[in-house]
Length: 391
Image (cartoon, rainbow, N blue to C red; front, top):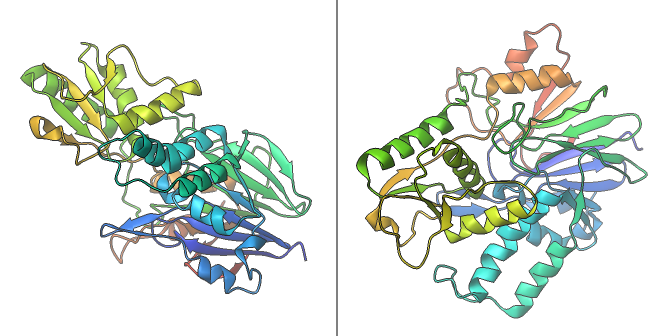
């Protein structure tokens, strides 16, 4: 029956990394995100074998649609592998997410190799390169507030905040409404507006990426980014020493550079490494301004004089002559933000995924917090990987 809805985390259940979720609506087989994770320096992928062990899917070719919420690697890093084995599926994401995905999964790897980038590794075969390019060209770009009717259900797309291009997906069967959040932010950032929850829509189930759902004492410090920026600028101004800022995640590097440019009132030269510059140029092609007149791409040798170097590569060969400052900050919502979101949506059911372990056995979960609120009707499932749930 069309009212039968099933859900299974293939990755990113009660841990962070390799976010990938199976959703079955009636006889429609859907995948939400396709990421990779890292643990102890090793990558891990979603468990697609557990999916073909269910009574619903005997072959990955039975997957009808794949939706990518945003372009972080823990949500998109396994996409080309999934597309290769689910050859009949259609893939949907926003135009910005498509651009960022193509850069991270193709341009950054294959184009740098063909250009002879010294840090790009060995060459890959032309057949492999063309196969990846062909897969990515088949991605369908969607727009916010757009609705696609698949008969069994309708899919609508809403801004999620978090990073440019991130989207929430609302599935409407006519009788039930399921919202997949991906990573989201309630409040605006330097690069995005906050998420837009579907207005005047009664949500039955929210599949919620809840990184801090078991961390009641974790509070996101919105000032941490600007404190780090001011520290870097003060160091560069007072010492005159070249300063390298190592930001390992490309999307965070973009946000850090944006903040650095806004606070750099003395016009200190800021140099950018090749991978970060590549993705910034892609974003500026889509009218997302990042750089200013003080930004340049680093050349074949470190520049002379006081300056700041922003790099996404901790092994960059230039770093030996710099004072290195690691840069990290969170783009995820904290415990209180999650509570605000759940209260605003007030779903009948919340399925929590992408969830880190509790810091202590005494920590309250978001379920225990919300249960004490008499106005909230939500029941919770902390979904485990490879477990099938009837929603």
